[in-house]
Length: 213
Image 1: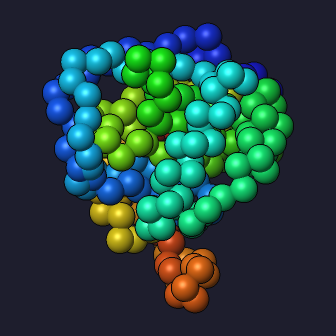
Image 2: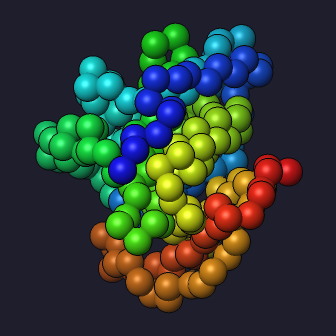
Image 3: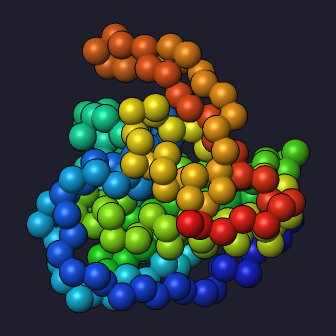
């Protein structure tokens, strides 16, 4: 199975002014997606580069994951995470041919990441996260473009994900890329406070042309 031509490429986009405060979006099953709600103070005029993750990125990726998990609203993980365990998991997946990890960085600082896994039956499942101060700046869109390109090159016929129904910003982002709502997992994920959350299932067929709106 090919790793995809995105293994050595980078995608550059120009920083577009002061990032606004936003909420992060996420796929429930341990994966996260950019959301387009309110965020903190940001940086101005910086280039953002999207590239394949490297071993030297793992510590920063784990810290980024931990910061989103601490928000307790956008990904499956909540509160304090086991950083050593998360780092081991990422290191094990980093060079597997059926997995691709992308990072978005600004000034050599990772500000977003995406992981996509291609199953043997041809469906690639993804999840991503973006630092709070960089949401609504096109980072999630750039990560998605890289992941979808990789999935096509790797031979996937579909890209799939799950997202919390309350994360309307992330849902809108996915829909702009052609993802369709396929179903709802009702009372599916148990949260730390005992609540049972639904999850929206979305999919993007790759056997028909799509483009973000």
